[in-house]
View 1 (tube, one colour):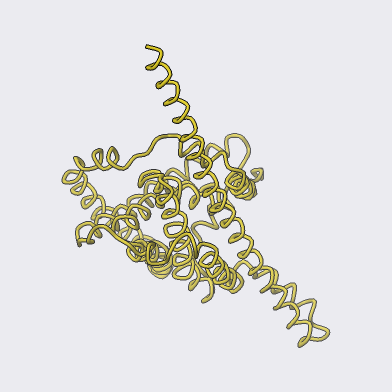
View 2 (cartoon, one colour; view 1 turned 90 degrees about the vertical axis):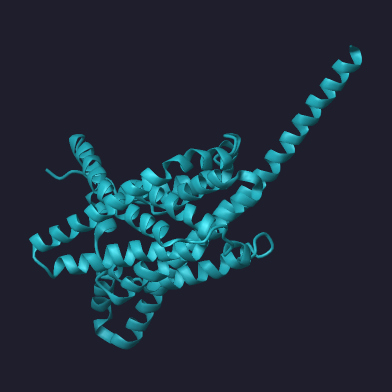
Length: 339
């Protein structure tokens, strides 16, 4: 009996040590990951600020007495240009590739487990349209709730829904941004989480949370989190090239192109186009749910992970700093409602 108790106590002690070692290793990897994201964010700010300073210097050199006026004009239209963001993203992606060089190979990011079928692609594309429709109403309810307490997030809504007004912004929003965000969040973040032992579901959910809060926009964060779940599932099962395609489809086709079309046709025609897309997409999603519903729960059961990984992730210092900073920026999109 004493031997049994002794062996059990030894087993318990070993389990505690193993658990402690696993937690330490996992949290070290998350600290590294979140630290990289903080530095990546810093590169974005450096790109934007550096580009504006460069423009200001050029203006001061070439404009003489008109320099102050031209700099003021540049500052007024700074939000319409994405030159600094493009530079910052390029620098950030180069940095992240070097940062993760020894931990994650680019070939691992491109791995896939299933072949994309036309029906699956059509289903996901349709789901994105349905999500946009649903969140249009959710955003309206959020705004109504804020209005009831004297607040508004109209600035955030405008930023999230406004189409591009310059070529640089169109290139960034439609192509450069999606490429960088897929590389960072569905590439480095999600695959690092999966390699750490977190599991597919955990990697999909946590990477989507990082992706959502990164937008630092009260209304956009909710939508991009849910959208990130779709992109992450596609990336982890079918490959990151497909999630990049879907991201471009969401930003350039559904965002920029439809906004352009809506501005150049009558309001009635724009409504008909929207309803037609929603109707067809809704039918496709409904058919997919009927055909694939039985596979959802088995997939979740097979790939879910213990809750400890979520706790370990959000108890690391760099992760807390990343989320707090972005949430503080998110609060800047909320202001008092003008009477």
